[in-house]
Length: 383
Image (cartoon, rainbow, N blue to C red):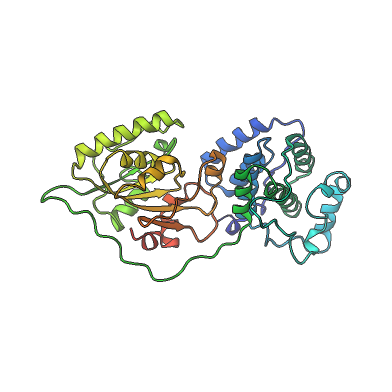
């Protein structure tokens, strides 16, 4: 969780110069982020994406920053030098830029944040003006200098300004992204039922479970036999998790055609290995869609565990089978928001939803052993 390792503590430079190519910056920061799980790099990437000329993309970044950094409840600068540094750095922007944001320059004095529009369809909409947003974004981002108070102030103003405008967008997806970021949530409680029994098979028939990685996921090891998450599930929850040679894998390309081919290959792999059916298939991201495709087209699967899987029509089609579905996901997933896919499986009798209680923005958090233990995912999902 980012608030446990404050990205603003240290000398991280999130600034962007007015003549900088934002597309190149996003690509560069994305590549850096893939090399390490450093939360400062994640924030840097989202800060760059916040300036996108695409309405949905910039809103998704604003929501991720707003939630991930806890900006609504963040302690703002104390009186004295920290506030004066902000004033000194932003003095020339007060009249031209900051009046266009939802807060006056010293918004931390207010007891409450500005009120939000409660209706999902606002009475008045604000059309997206990408040029105006870029001007505001670059004007303020150029002021960042690795100052924990100044940087958090500016990023907070930009994120909330973007969300307030998005709530009044004529685009329903943009509005839903904004509402997902600002709506409160409470962790569920209550007794959990016993885990379901595995499928019945004929004598001697193998009952096998397996994992499917997501887009570009073949580069990682978490799903492979011997990988951290594979070992965790094998040793604690599914002793029948496949751990031999000829494991299933697919190209991981960001392509519907490749996922369709992967589903056919998985069907053939499963039939050769377990003709009586698979017990549990863990699928991360689009790997979950591959599993859902295969299930919807006849591959016998008793239980699908979707890990941060985009909710596409093919995932919904798998709901019509006899398979039980466990939907494990973040409360707001910026990766899925950027992809423009759904983030909630429709409620059905055969669906168990597990939303992470703590706000995390790492798309891969749902295949982390530490997260599974901290969130009691196996117990809550009856896995």
